[in-house]
Image 1 (cartoon, one colour):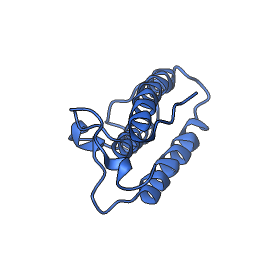
Image 2 (cartoon, one colour):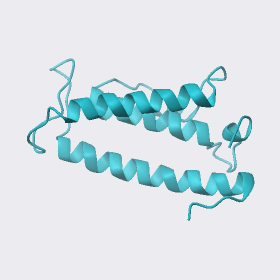
Image 3 (tube, one colour):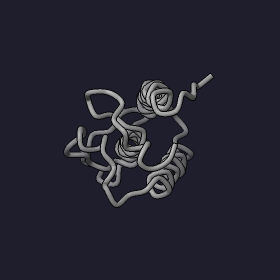
Length: 123
């Protein structure tokens, strides 16, 4: 899908493809890199000046950085490292499980939105 379809809200909540990927980027950065998110609902909206290439690049960068952090975790029961040690952190196991759940849920949303845009299905 391309602009403006990636910003098209196919459901009353306003959810759109670009916003989903922007949100998943925030989740990766929060869980694995310890970045604080003050307004989770806002993460579902990409900035108007952000195009598809920028949002995709940020997502891939976040995943690569998260993978780098996870490469240092020898024990899945250990807490994910934080840039500020005083910040609470989940175990690597919990963070990975949550990220799988989060990605799967939003991939399903993306499949539905994509079908509404152009009839493509995720089969």
